[in-house]
Image 1: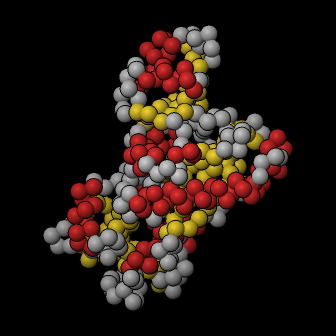
Image 2: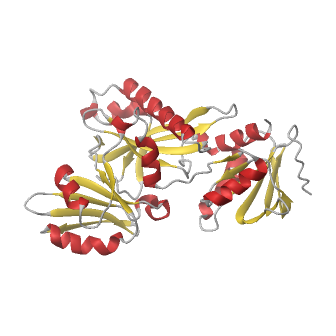
Image 3: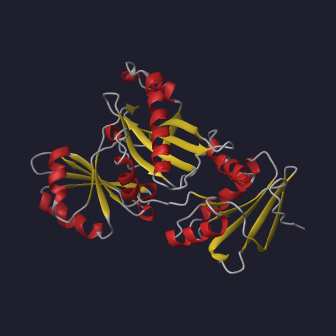
Length: 355
């Protein structure tokens, strides 16, 4: 039998709101709880199952006590802390905050354009941002392609751009030839067009959603494969931002539109993995990456949103310059490595519950 006790000095009770459409995040709740070291109760629920009038939620209570997890479905009092693992309409978020105060975190599941607008307002981050514009039909695409020769088209809505889906890499090869790389199901597709007009005729129907155009950055390679960097940042059990993971990832192909990661290594191993990058100062690179991570976190804090769990994708170009590719407000901990972002959201939730 599970008794939900809201006494904050005993077993803390937190809520994790998940999506019916993303079972991967539903399963993640149990994994987080298994790795968490202390006693706590997590109530996993859907936003539609929150009753504002009764201040109760229908869901699954997972009570961890002395390393054992007890599970029960039912209707429970609204927890004092809620961690959002899915998109919730802002007006609903504000309504929840009206009941429990500022203890709703990751309360802004931003899309690519919203995030870029927050970051570009911070002068300290602007040098690390690739040129980015909203796609305007038949107007700015040919201009930006002619300027940068290599660009990405990315769907603004994070639901359509997850896992490289819906993303196109467009390269101007000269003599009016346009080369396109994109993902279709589980394979990488490449097409060439002998004129910009033929490319435009093919691509236009595919861009019915809102897209951004982003300057492509030629990152350093390992084994002739594209690389990027994953930096996971979390607030910890003291309420402070902290690095949870920092790894260099090598793709399974020569493009950032990738099906899978070939390998992930500490930054210090870069020169060992690729002798052609032997002149890169990995200590300086790692310090700069971490500094950028904290700047992004503080920029989000200044924006007024309550974030505590983010994933940042970055890259290093051939001149050693660092670029911010994307900030993910629904990050998934990396598999197969020690990634503290698996448990830190639970640690931060417990911190908030005990305040």
